Image (cartoon, rainbow, N blue to C red; front, side):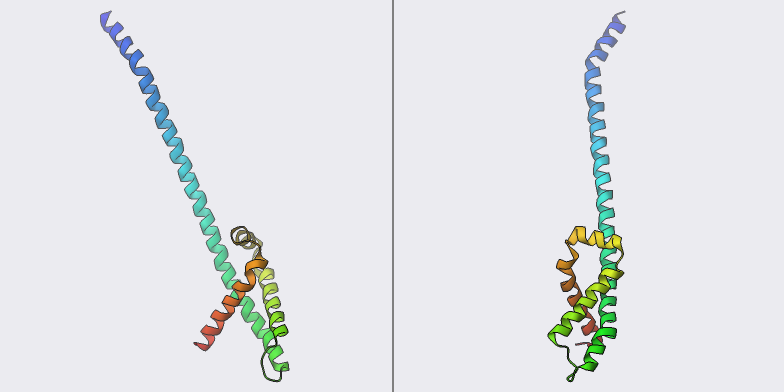
Amino acid sequence: MVLSDFAFKCIGILFPVVTLFIVALIVYGIALLRKKIQEIDHEVIRQSLSAALVEAESVGIDAIRSTNQVLVDELRERSKNGRLTEDEAKEAMRAAKNYFVDHITPGSLRILESSLGPVKKWLEGFLEAKLSKEKYSITGA
């Protein structure tokens, strides 16, 4: 009887400690799982934004090339000096913007807008950068 009394006293003393240890392990495990889930969410968001930017770059280059081939060449032919007026350049930019908005997928457009803000605020600068890059790659200057 003495041994069983001692065992029950030990269990009575150790039970709260063991319970506390198990609770701490569960809390740590849950925190670790939440962190991993958050990392997965961030990775998915990062990959989605990266894919949307790749698509935006491709569509932006296509918009510049299409506008140059169709509209700018036509406007230059009508011009006496072969240069675009300010209004013609604005018309070309509007055409490139319209091409971009019409050709980018709605999903990519939503991702870009949620990350970068409204398209109208950044699209012109984006297309101008693509135009400069395109001119540089053609002329090599």
